[in-house]
Amino acid sequence: MSGQAIPVPSTVPSTLPNNPPSTGPISRITVLSGGMGGARFLQGLQHGIAAGTLPGVAPDAEITVVANTADDLWMHGLKICPDLDTVMYTLGDGIDLDRGWGRRDETWSVKDELAAYGVEPTWFGLGDRDIATHVVRTQMLDAGYPLSAVTTALCNRWLTPRYGQGVRLLPMTDDRVETHVAVADGSTPSGRRVVHFQEYWVRLRAEVPAEAVIVVGLETCSPAPGVIDAITDADLVVLPPSNPVVSVGTILGVPRVREALRATRAPVVGLSPIVGGTHVRGMAHQMLTSIGVEVSAGAVGLHYGARTGDPEDGGVLDGWLVDERDADQVEQVREAGLACAAVPLMMTDLEATAAMAAAAIALVTGAGVDGPA
Image (tube, rainbow, N blue to C red; front, top):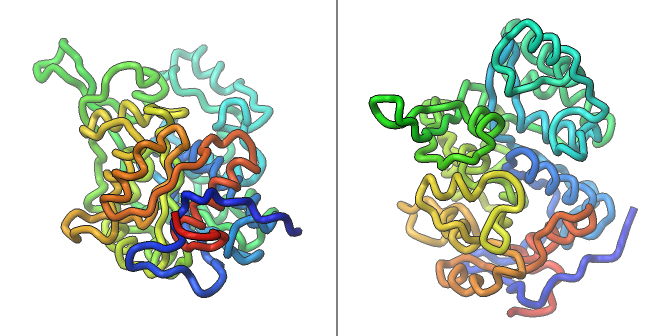
């Protein structure tokens, strides 16, 4: 299947500092993904590959997704991996499109029965169809299989029939890592309490300020098998518009991942999750505030940093896309050593999302660009 190349705005520079355009087709793309935002971007990326509208990308290009697992939790004796499942269900055409998570045509009999017994927590509901995934995952983990092997087994149902070996999903680590959020609580001696990220997001709806983000186990975990190779052997690495603190940020915190990004020969490009001064969906605003980063497209790009900068700063990007509403921030990002352009970044449909992917690729490879800005 082929299609017309998506036009790339003339504001995209044709080359990167110290990073010449690729001389061969892009055959291996690695994406560091959170849940909903990352999954929707991946849909558009895959659509662009299938339609032949991504500049310089081979028609049989393979995608490896490294997904955040710091949102994971145990509940009712089951291991739940929200971001892994959101990516898997979305690409496998099983996601609930209205919610953006969980299974389509879901029922809630188990949730209702647990509530009738007074079993807590009642704020986190597992759908009947979704529970089957968690049961299989938990049984395999109990049998001694690592999370990466379990994820491959689950994807044999969801991804392999649709993409063959064209899409691979990896957890960032096989080790247990959990994100917790500190919130104010005047009833405690410290004046604050710490809740699991899912409680902050689902029960508290992220409506109270996050005073700190604590990721337990991150510093001592190891990358899952294949994660480092997926970065170092890639032709392109993408940081999609996922949460920069509790999605992409936790993946970057896995030991050796940031170093692999800095060392890879592949260009590394990111797309802003902040549009017009706030997040489109989710809680990037709250999380950025908790770590003292300004809530703006330009500030998030500078937070990730440029690979051409001081190695001590640990920058990981070559290019950064912002929305056209944030075009006034392009120059400050370029001054920090990053290629930057302003394009529409609303994932309204597959074509719009594929156009975002095309612009990101053009930004860091020069493919499909008529001339420099």
